[in-house]
Image (cartoon, rainbow, N blue to C red):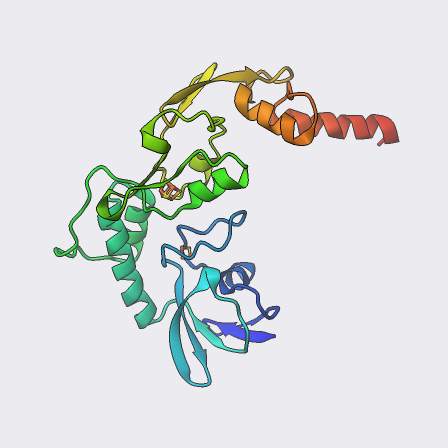
Length: 246
Ligand code: SF4
Ligand code: FES
């Protein structure tokens, strides 16, 4: 299927998400709540673009918009920029401490809107990526709690959770750096709980928390690994080389 994005001819499969087509063609659309490994959020609306089909233009959310017919896409039109500025201003008022949002506000020249009251000290935009990451591991230790302005992501009652394995996947996917992780050579603290780190037998770097390695071992039916991810990959490559003489 043929479409154009900002005048550039692009080929795509029917049903492909517009954001993916744009990225493949090196056209930049800003995103916050999109993560390649956890698609389908469609929450922040920073990635909006304008789509024209048979002369009719509509604003759509590119990360969850499947291309079903030939169209002309505009990522930088006046309508897009105007709406994106409002979206960013709202996100900034929700999470004024989030550096990535402040950088986007600067880039898109978002004015200060007096009617948007700021929630001081906040970085979370409630996109839900962290909850999804935790669920996808089968742990489900965090969830959205409370309602309205009190809504936040946390462990039940903000207490250390027995379900949390301290893997830090939630913090790794968070687009705004809202989840605090403190780590030294021997331990990692996250969600009000401290975890002991296992040190990789090969390189001496942290291989993960004991709980995280035990969970991975339970899932794979193997013993908990004594190696970090990188050294595990190297060990497999070494074993292949020894077997096949490459
Ligand atoms: S903590 Fe981060 S990933 Fe989780 S909901 Fe808030 S912004 Fe999204
Ligand atoms: S990146 Fe598309 S809605 Fe957030």
